[in-house]
Length: 347
Ligand SMILES: Nc1ncnc2c1ncn2[C@@H]1O[C@H](COP(=O)(O)OP(=O)(O)OP(=O)(O)O)[C@@H](O)[C@H]1O
Ligand SMILES: [Mg+2]
Image (tube, rainbow, N blue to C red; front, side, top):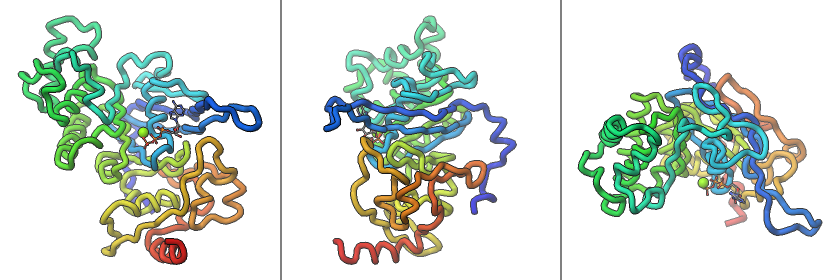
């Protein structure tokens, strides 16, 4: 399977753990009450455990509403989990007790992330907190240089910058205090293709130089695969598959992960074009997750057992986990046949 592609266990274990999410749950109570008089809960994140080591990137993928940003907010301490814990930094600090600059975040829209009344220098310096003047100025200069912005740009205000420059400022601000971990939630999604490539190059270079770990969230599977060492596929608040990035090309086992990958434009396997797997129906609501496997209502290979019994996330190898009763049952080659048969009477 993917055994021969695994990075060497020894060198990996020497990297300090900088993120340890343990069985984290985030439920939101809704305002409206249901017919039974109870206030329904949105199961945005429903029992997620992931770990990340220094200098590594974990990509989070899955369709809109599956809980990626909610998990991101738990990781950065912006929200407290309903249960479970999030430990961050080389000293495994509980993030709800204050991350102390160990975790930073960059979001999709740099214009709204930057204060319009603050110059670039002031915005970056603010992230340094109490660092005194000469040292502070030096570090701001370094951060500007690190993201490839000329020093004179530091005197400008956000509206005097292009979108790409604004996002570089956000990255500089995230990096300047030397965090262990940066959450990048759709951080390159608002940039055009060539700028996206530049910012991804920049992030990779900065990671090599500083050893900062990234959690990278994007709808763009190609971008995620490019920058990530490992990828987690989420469905309705849970991880359904976590695998090394290489396994994303061949070796995905969960039918949803396989289907998701097939939606990437222009992907090939063994020289032939992969047929897109079209999933029937909408994702079920996170308010009332179905019994049994949460993906079963849309899964092309689900059976009665799948609909009754919820599968556990189990290890396939040391760094590959899957939550499915029939792992590997839907392959991309057979997917083409399945799709044609499935869609025959529908569209
Ligand atoms: N503050 C909140 N109150 C109530 N429900 C919320 C809140 N934040 C998120 N949700 C719900 O939690 C679920 C997960 O949302 P989340 O934003 O994490 O998804 P996502 O994977 O980031 O989606 P997208 O790809 O669209 O950004 C959704 O059903 C959403 O409506
Ligand atoms: Mg989101």
